[in-house]
Image 1: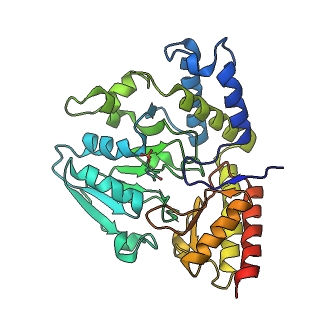
Image 2 (image 1 turned 120 degrees about the vertical axis):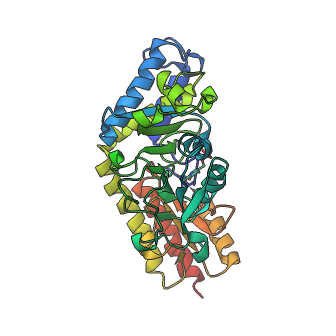
Image 3 (image 1 turned 60 degrees about the horizontal axis):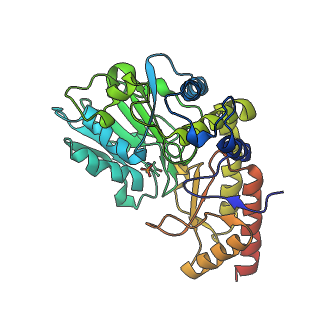
Length: 364
Ligand SMILES: *Cc1c(COP(=O)(O)O)cnc(C)c1O
């Protein structure tokens, strides 16, 4: 039985079996005489890795051929710029941005470098304690596009619906809940997600978008910032992050073969989050959930205790019990349990046990 449990906000936990397979591949990659870190990205071996990663992604999401799957670098943060460089630069109309939390807030100033941005919702007014209802969203029918973050990783807020109007292009940052549940991808123009929270190691970012849109590119761009270029080069323009892409491939196999697809993943994720939220809600105010009920994230459960000293005592005790990665994001403090795909129900039960025990001894 494992004695340490990983609740890190990112890079996050990866499946045990994937770690084992990746470790072996470092010495000798399956189907090759070489170790993973020394194989050329121009080899047939790596082309097949990319092709399978794309096939698996398409299968998991039920993607049509109208959509491209790109494996890029620069993290979620570079997408904050690449999206408006394609869709906002030179546009006569503004883009609508939902400012729902820390990460969507990071996207806004990058977009403003390229054109006009309107805030369809400004969650800073309520301290990012909840997400907006449809009535509260101010959406322009002629917006260049709508951008939002499906899961606000820092505050622990998650949308349980698709936002916006059908006639406006939707762009969504799904970095912290991608592949955690089924998603109607055909309703989006572009979706992006870096791998390191829910899908693999840091170094690779998946971009899934309508081929015709990505290829549209009105004016020449630097190659590395051009979706069209990466599309033409099938994600091998320059040296891609071979290791990160290989591990991401292993995770997609795990999702398909071990888990059995995204509906099954979703059911498991719900079980984990429900167990932890139930404990928080039944603690008579000892543990305090940060997000309002309708906005709670299944991926990042953010909570606090009555006083900072009590939080520190809890975190120290949790660490002694082998529970890692629980301190909240540096911008807001508190406690955050990230329950990404690879975090087991057993780990969540262990966390609940430690929380129950800590409460019994400290409720005063
Ligand atoms: C962590 C995070 C980012 C930042 O991604 P980098 O790969 O570090 O640039 C962006 N968006 C969301 C939703 C995140 O959780």
